[in-house]
Structures are given as structure tokens and as C-alpha cells.
Image 1 (cartoon, rainbow, N blue to C red):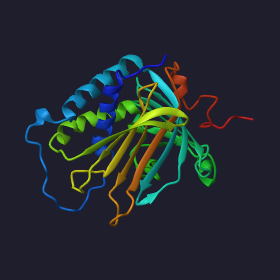
Image 2 (cartoon, rainbow, N blue to C red):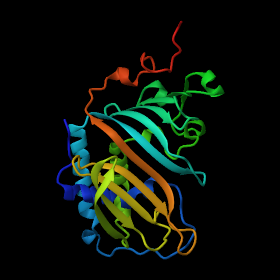
Image 3 (cartoon, rainbow, N blue to C red):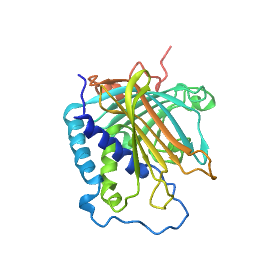
Image 4 (tube, one colour):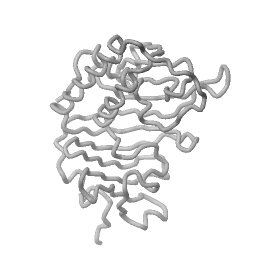
Length: 279
């Protein structure tokens, strides 16, 4: 059953919140010291109704979306270097929060599988490599935010999925209400994997230490009325230069409410390769 967050207007506002508050997802801080511009009347701040709609959207997810599968295409800047596109097949279940991923590409990551189930396995993720000498090590258990688990990644697996993102964005919403100075543009008729979507673009024209991104875009699927792509950029490094891509995530081939069970997040699943099969 396909589920929407509500009227498109509400989702545009939700997407704007994602773009404006996504500074939570990065640890980059501008060194330039500029006096904060604060909003005098918070009640008139445009993020107030956004936070209310986001809260309603979170309740809608909890009530109607049990799980989903998708192909995630992501590109991230890690330690100053932009990675090539990474392709993952993912399964996400909300209760208990559970994630299964297998890397489809690029070649160096192909076959890597990761499972995380909140509260199980010592609250550690289980993983194995798909090729190379590391594959001989077999399955390992790692803390999600440990250096090994975070190698080549910007965020831990515990932050995967739209529900987790929405929840964390709401937590920082009150702090962001202090600031204004943003330009918003809408672009209709944008194609994402052949599907019609609308892009909501938020721009912070002036670099300030409390703004983590110069430009953020959220793409809303017109039929599903759900965000299917997020991308963010820092300010150009030189005058008339292009914005610097920090991260980009695109969800395609999304399927909702698959009826996932514990077996879908069990390394003993015969369809997975965590455990070597006896010959």
C-alpha cells in the first residue's frame, strides 16, 4: 500500500526543513567569524509551521510505514575527498530499528553486507567484505561509530532512513529558529529515475558559522509525496566558482510495507553471505 505524508504543500515544507536543518548531518564548521543574525520574533519564523508538519509526518510514518526496500545511490565527501557513486540495496524496518545493506558497486565494495538491529548483537553492526583479502576475515561485529565501521562513510548506519533523519532534524529545529536569511526556490517537473518530482532548493547566500550548507536541495516524488533525493553543497572555494558537493543521496526502486521479519535482518539468512556455507 502506497502511503503519502499528506498534502503536497505540507511535504514541500517538510522538505524545506530537511534542507534547512540538515546541518545536523555534517561536522564541518566555517572558520569565518560573522555576527549571528537572530530572529526577533520566533513565532513569525517560517520554520514554526514546518516543525509542526514534520511532527505530523513522523506520526504518519509510525502509523503507516512499517518497512521499505530501495536502491540507495550515495556520494559523499569524506576527509576532503569526494567518493564515486556507491550503490546499495537496502532494507529498513522501523520497529525494532533494523537495517540490511549489500553493496552493488563500485567494484571494490561489491558484495559487502551489513546488518544492524537496535538492541541486538551488543548493539553492534555485523559486516563482512565481499572481495579481497578482507573477505577472508569473515563476519565482524563493530560499534556503528567505530573507525573501522566509519571507514569511507560520513554517517553511521544508525542514521540510515528517512524516519531517523526526520526525528533528528526535529531535535535541532528549535536551535535553527534563532536564524533567518535563506532563499527558497521550487522547480517542478524534475525527473528522478524517470519519475516526476518537485525540487525544493534552499540557499544561504552569505557564509556564516551557524550555516552548515550553502545550498541544499530536496526532491519530492509527485506521486508518493516523499523525498527521494537530498543533496547539499558548501560555498564555492573561489569567486564565481561552483558550489562544492558535500553529499548526495538518491532512493530508487522503493517498495513500501514488504512484511519484513527478523529473518531479513539475520546473518544466518541463507540468501546472505555472512556465514560460509558448508560444501
